[in-house]
Image (cartoon, rainbow, N blue to C red; front, side):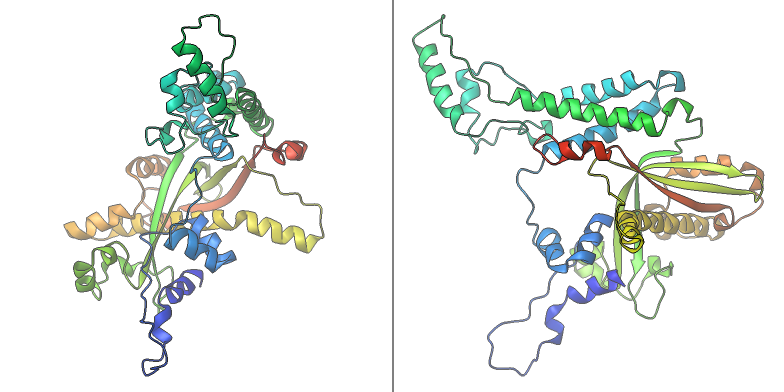
Amino acid sequence: DILRGLQKKSSPGDDADDNDDSTTLQKVKIPHPTHLSPTSLETFKKCPQAFFFLYILKLKPDPPITPELARGILCHKALEDIFDLTPEDRTLDNLQNLFRKEWKEKRGVRNSVASGEHMERLDENDDSQNDESYDCLFRIDDGRQEEYGSIRMHDMRNNDDDASITTSSYDIEEEIKWGQYSLRLLHNYYQLEDPRKVQPPNPLMKEMWVNAKFNLNANSSMDDDDDYNDDNHEEERDNNPEESKLGRDSIIVRGKIDRIDMHYDPSNNKIHLRIIDYKTGKKPNFKYSPSVNERIANEQFWKMKIYALILWKMILRAEKMNSHNYGSADQREGYKYGIPWIFRQKLLQAMDETRDRQKWSEIIELHSLKLVYLTSHADDASLGNGNGG
């Protein structure tokens, strides 16, 4: 229903009165986005106007990277890489060192003394700053840089080797506090799960991209998979490059799942999949009435249910590819929206004892969703100030 509501919002001019001569406004066709994500869908669910500003007009915040976002990215990367080690090597020290290693690569150059060349690069309009290296984080932008830089450059011009005035273009103290808090989050993770006890084949997948195409036709179900061979809009898509990415009656939703674990249950001969999502933001507090607590829980798990729906459609697509003979074009489309090859192989290995049963939907079960909050309520005070998320 949310996707269909978005489809209606995308063509506001369709309901305009063509015979109304009192206005000079022309119909404006708002283009479909090339894809949607669980986050953008959640935004549309809460506020369609905010969705329009963020995902249609592309009015994004500047700078694109913040300390909170960087913490989340780096913690996720460390939690991904720790499972590349043998179980006995998945210690807390190694996990935190993986975070330090990633931050060292991302942080860029941190000069304690600003040279003349470096001071010139402090200009906010300098295009040479590398956002990809997170160089914009922890900069001091309070006006003191220009004053200190002028003094330091004056010292350099006069060859004052004894000059005692030095300046840093970064707030090193804030960076240290940020790093210490980030390492504490990884310590909290060890209180929730010991990665040394996670045995193969788990994690089955890490940081796995998922994507699916949803049919928006009011006469068909969202689970209808026939939209992969939609001939009704073939000519329209050929004539419109944008529509080639997103049909008028279908929409692509994609995102990244942090981790997928599996468990084989011999009692019912099924493979149970668990979707796991790491969270570095503020942990929800279930201290209210049962109805309010239930609403909070539903809000927290809403995006995870979208991930589960996408993954299930991909599994159904793989099942269909196994049971039909498709042409080359259909095969490309099927693989595009099917499960990744490595995931497919791991599932086939796990299904070795039940390979005679052809339908994957009868063997695989999306068993549970798990949110892993690395923060605790003891961290709420830190989250509320400049050092937290």
